[in-house]
Length: 253
Image 1 (cartoon, rainbow, N blue to C red):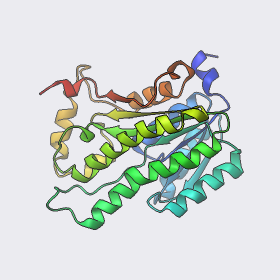
Image 2 (image 1 turned 60 degrees about the horizontal axis):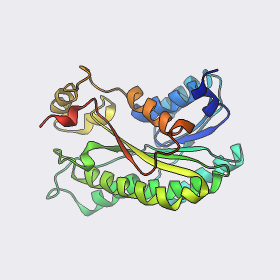
Image 3 (image 1 turned 90 degrees about the vertical axis):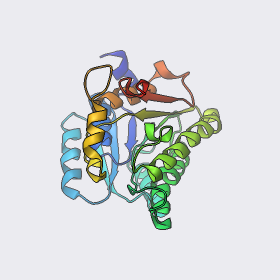
Image 4 (image 1 turned 120 degrees about the horizontal axis):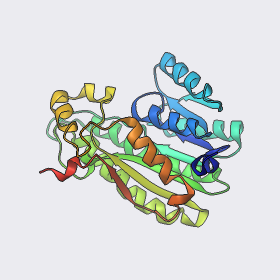
């Protein structure tokens, strides 16, 4: 058994929004390392069942929970379920995200509230609930994006919410350290997932995504590997940091 697997076998991870895209890649990577997996989803029972089967086929336990995290009551129910099923939690990956792809002048107040509730408020509340189940310490990783620092087309609501998420990462890293919990964020470049289908400039984003120093577009697996590293013993002294995983694309003007 590898050192990495010794760190993860028998642990429990919650990956929010783990039924598709980057979240699914992260959930599967943890499962390969021997971690029992919990993930939430909103609508597609079929997709959730498929991912659950894929995870269980890797020899670990998997719990899927239908829960819209924009509602704080659902967050309470989710963590109560985890506590009942597993008794404790080791890792939280705040991956679930949403947003309305409009400029600031076209955005409505309800769109702002929707985005902030899911992308900023929910990770905060999930982190606090998770900390109560992390009886032996643990790690929390927030999934951000380069739109938190760079101005991207149609990204106003998501970009500002991700900036809030990165600030939240730093504050929680300090507050939860006394409980043996590390908190970091992974900021990803363009990954070709279904999320891009909602952007009017999808083709431009795919073109930009190819401009990496690695000669290819990022995949969900690229981010998943870094997320798992940040949850490992080897990363114990990385705290409150935003790790950029973009293949070097942000180095271009």
